[in-house]
Length: 303
Image 1: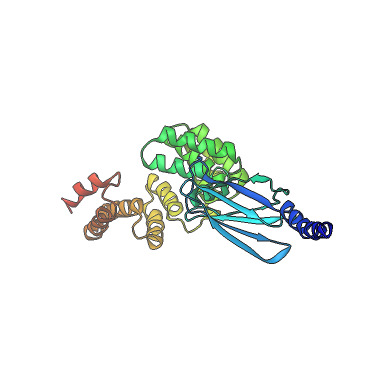
Image 2 (image 1 turned 120 degrees about the vertical axis):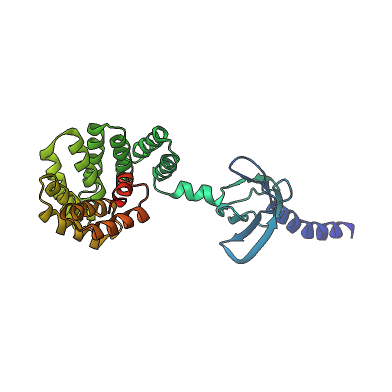
């Protein structure tokens, strides 16, 4: 009688042991990329093999979590999220036999994730522009150089390097940067303009004409193109040929300072003081810091 009771107890005890052997303990900590714990992070656990399984837990003040998974024979998807951070997902299989799997998660802030996801060199280009606007031109150029070192075909960075070199009086270096830009993006108008200006600064008139012709073709409505043609006529004393070009430039951009000033000077030379006064007044309103603003003010005194 006692023996039969023992057998019955044993039969009921075996499934309990098997059930316990299939359990798994998972614990860990959720931190940011600097190792700081993230309190209140939500961890959602689902099981691809069991569509109805879902468990949610949150981390404590130290970013820790702990849970027991009854069936550790299956894989589980851990979805980890927290406000202001990029969520991540990992597929993991707990350890069976009541063993503990330590599973730590590192979350990136949304801005950190966005910075890493953007095209290589763009962050350096953006930082370089900020430095340039702050007047730190040497530091800005260094950032632009970092950008092309990371991404050699980043033509906007080559344009920025060329602009910096031309501003520093390094025409040859500016021309090289412009050519690298154009090698990536042929007929890109800003780089054609840079190449033309650099060639002119070098004294290479032939190369200047080549790049200007390409620039005019790529950007025929730029008032700077029309002004450049007008300036050549003005230098030759051909006001009659320059005047319609300047008027076309102002039709495209009524506030274009060089065209306003030079057209006003043509009117001064032809004796139309009223028209000259109108143009110079408009120039000082839209571009008070223009390089010839002081001369314009003096001219207005006598018109």
